[in-house]
Image (cartoon, rainbow, N blue to C red):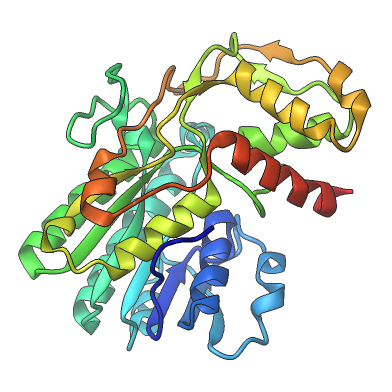
Length: 330
C-alpha cells in the first residue's frame, strides 16, 4: 500500500523515538531518505526498537530528556521538522503520579516549542491525544467540540494544544497537532503495568491465559493501526496548505469497536497459528478510573486539509500486528 507522498531530503528530530510510535516513525522517515535524530531518555522506550537503525547513515540516537532545555536546543539545531512524540502516556499512570506526567508532557513540550522557536525550526508536528475530548459524550468526536478532562494525562495533552496555538499565533510557527486514537501495531510492548490493551490481549491469548477486560467490555474505541499514523505524520510534515497549520486533527480509522468485539477479532486471527486459542475465555475486572466510555473519530478534517486516507482497518491492522507478535514473542 502506502499510496501517499513521503517527506524526503530533510533533517528530522523525532522525540520519544525509541518508543512504539516514535521508533516506527524513525524507521519510516529514515527509509524515505531523511536524516533522523532520535531523542529519548529510555524511560518507556527501548533501545532494541532502534538496534537495526544504529549503524545506518543519516541516523543519530541521543539519549537525553526533553525536560532539559539545553538538550532540546542542541537537538533542534539545523533541523527542518520536529516530530514530537515524547510523553508519559497512560491515564492510570497520570492518576498515580500526576506531577511527573505534567513535568514530561507539559514542561517537556514547552521546552521543544521554545527551543524550536529560538533555532528557527520550520515545522513542528506533535502527538496530541483523543483523551482531550474528556467527558464529552458526542459521537463522532469532532476536533472543535471537547469536554472537560477526566484525568491528569488528558489535562497535559490539552495544555499542549493550548501552548501550540499560542506559539503558532505569537511566533508564526507552523505547528500541527495529531490527536491519536488508540494506536496499535508492531513494537508496542505487551509488558508493564501501563501496557495498552491490544498487545496485552494478544500476549495473554498466545500464552493460553484469559485476557482481563476492565468493566463490561461494551465500551468502544476507534482502534488505529500504526501505518495510518505514519501516513499522517508524513502528510503533516509535507503539507503546504496554509489552512492546515495551527490545527489539531483526529488520527483514527473512523470506526468504533467494542472491547468484546475486539477480543473476537484477535482470538479469530490468532487461531491461524494455534487452534487451542479459540477456547480461551476473557475475565472481567472493575472499570478503570478516568477511562472514557465511548470513542469514535470524525476524520473528515484530516481528509480535507491533509489528504489523509487511512489504509488499514482494524481487521487489516490486527492481522499485520499478530504476524509481528507471533514472530517476536514466540
